[in-house]
Image (cartoon, rainbow, N blue to C red; front, side, top):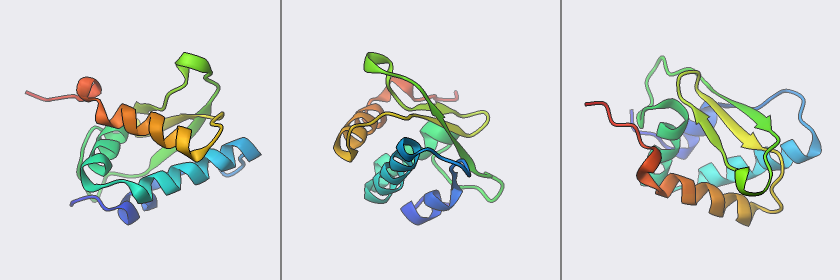
Length: 114
């Protein structure tokens, strides 16, 4: 099934108890997903799950927050467990969006099964 922002947002699971910083990053993440065009939405899904399609048994994408600063700060996708690790510290939505879009637009992380 082709991904849509609405379908992808239904897959995302944030922790039940979040700090103010984590809640802000969760808000950025939801907004970011809603704004993605189809190619970047597919890349986002691939980044988190290893597939650019939504399957009935895909399950959820669990979000974990991590402490990464400076040049180490970046989202990390753990495709085997469908985990998205997000840094807690983004100064604004614009910075979050720019860093995540740059990552999704770069094809060096893509996995191709031959």
